[in-house]
Length: 291
Image 1: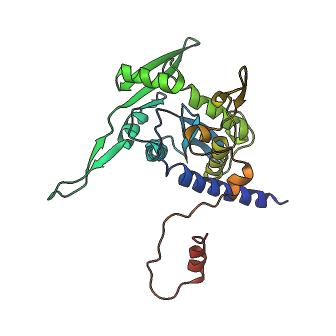
Image 2 (image 1 turned 90 degrees about the vertical axis):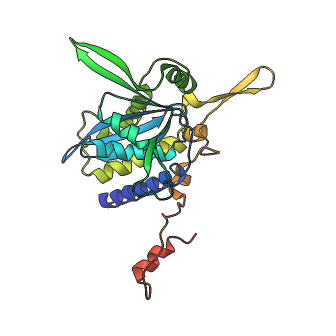
Image 3 (image 1 turned 30 degrees about the vertical axis):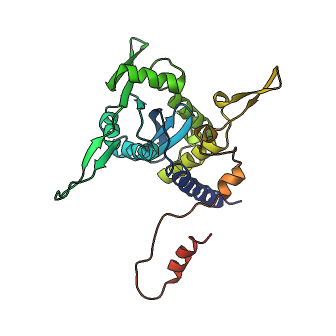
């Protein structure tokens, strides 16, 4: 089979999984509790690129991801906007690394516009969400030893301790959960290895791969830490396996790969505003809305 056919299949699968994620995940709002975010540096044939991702700690659910050639605010705004679309306005803990751009991007992302009063003009006033805690885990290496500092940028210590206990059973401020999912993605995609000869060529390939791996991880893969103990009889029990989507309430059964890739996702809202007869290309586009 020709390699161009495989590449075309992979690209189409990535676009399908991206639309699936936007429809089934971003259109549903969840009480996230704690979110951890991090970036992965990816080597490509045209230079390094960056992949930013976020995870919901309590359910291990992969929330969002973005790919860019620069590790800047544009990359983080894309990722933060996806998390903002999913989040309910509830107490939320955001845990990130020592990158200073996070401080402005995350606090600006979680804002809501206030309605204008009669007679007022101009843009609506944006008000930051209450009960948003932002913490940083800053790692530095000195004299061959790692030094870890945990900084509370915003939020009260009591609220942070309560969210840590509710989402991860207690413990200290950390970014361990997002680092674990980074390791999972590195294990499944060769171009994400730190030392590899399988370099990616384009950012579109990375984005397609990210959405394919994320959707399979969320809806198809069982997570050992999410299993539930079910009592059977008086003394017996068995473990009920769950996927992150099951734990988050976004699915009622584990999905198979066939279900995932054959799921028909509604296209984005669109309406024809032109005049005259419809062209052949426009008719093909309209047929995508027929189910």
